[in-house]
Image 1 (cartoon, rainbow, N blue to C red):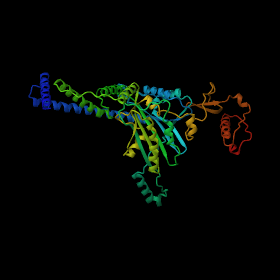
Image 2: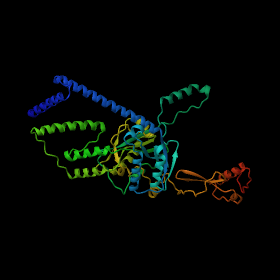
Image 3: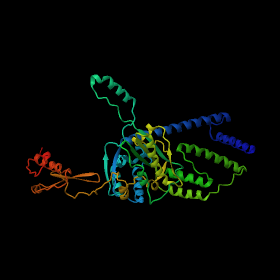
Image 4: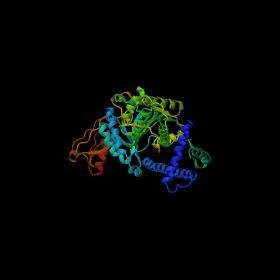
Length: 496
């Protein structure tokens, strides 16, 4: 080995001599030249770090701006579709939200959230998306799920906070002191509940694929862990997805080529770590090449097993599909931490059905308040964590809605029980309103013509179904227009 060390030392001196011949300022002695090279490397590294920090700051500004413009939409399901159709919907959303090249520097990288929220006797489905994409998302959603209803929700279903703060203690103490003067009711805030949650991440490198079974989704297994909640419990499954350009695919191909060449299975890591890792590997490759030219023979190449060949084939198929940077959060709230922990464990175990070349693992959460804040604000990470899933992988649980079988099995699901129909043409009016039609989130006022008002109108229905309120609205409008009317068998409440 001393022989090869001498060869490497000679190569290093030869490289320094070449640098001295090329650069005019490098005519000094080797020690002075080495100091200048180190100084240049420090300056280059500092400039790279500054650019990296500026990129993070710009990403932070764009993400906070996107968060403020997110709108919450509730989805009332009625019928489901095949997983292949859901996959097509996700592909359309990928092209809708993707900002490439200069657009991502000016407008950021938009993302969306698909959420399943459960409380006592209620299971609801939500989508949160930037307001500018709301109409386009609804059109694509209706083209896939034609029988669903989508409506905008003004108030978020996740509470603003669930912990008592020092301010609550100060307010309580102040109310106790000033009670003889102000006579203000003293009440301790009852907003302290236990929160337990986790994030699901890929256990191995993102080029390896999850199980691809297009005949079964995870929705039934997830909903099974969200039913039979107590009055104080709430469970949220949140899936954030941000579309990526083809850089991850190009990077994945080079990783697979190296895996196929060297037999070294790629490890999971961030872009920052992978950058320095690849830099070190390139340096080692250069050293190995120099050693081979000098007579040192490298050990024989790794012979791949049948399982490794299958992994490479399946991973190559994954790199052909569009990808999303994905964050999966599962959160349970309630008075008892042990019950919350059991809920989270039951839901996360459903994702084990996707185990194959890759699988999900639970990330241990230490900062519970930070986790709650991220879930509340639908906050995605500034630096991609390489938790990349393709459209076929996401289609099993992202934007999946229950069908008739699941609606019958889980009666707590808030669903569209009555099919919506589009209103007939020419019935929209602002006079003599007798009904309101709601179709695909749009409300249409339906009225009756003036000549038809001269006929008798008979309203039938059970007690409490709203007959009196319906008649009161129509009759009040006629009074305001200076007309008369007759109401037969009216209740005293309507007359009053």
